[in-house]
Image (tube, rainbow, N blue to C red; front, side, top):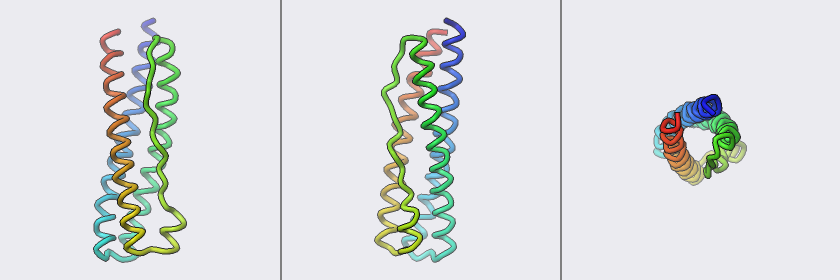
Length: 135
């Protein structure tokens, strides 16, 4: 049983690692998004899109880590009831039609993703605490 607990703890830490990276990229994208809304221009838009893309990669990695955690938790008779909701970077649409309206939509999606990351982080931290109590 100790091995299964250790594996679950490692999976939880991996998920938290990717969630933290995603949060940092999203916060950066949010800052550049604000600049973009107030007229930041092409370079600011490109930086923002890059941060959104980086956040998307980390969210996919976090989602995979959460799936692994879910599997590991079954071994210790625990259940994980969290999922990262999809994150749409607006990719093509925002690239082709960059305007203030789409910048506001992108900012809303960034905020929504930040909320989802915070929720998932809190849930996994609770699971990690429970696993630590078992160890």
